[in-house]
Image 1: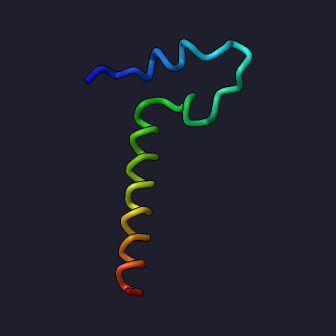
Image 2: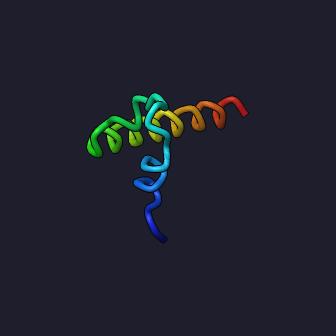
Image 3: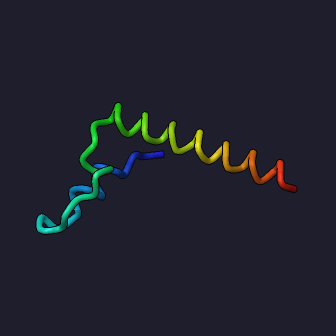
Length: 51
């Protein structure tokens, strides 16, 4: 599977403001993704406890 992320950024018009995620370095994106996954797992665990 090809990584199409660089194509998507290059295709954006130059006047379009970029989101914070688009401007983060790779390492920070990885940290952010891991944090989001951890929060998602915690939320799912809370839902399971309530059921």
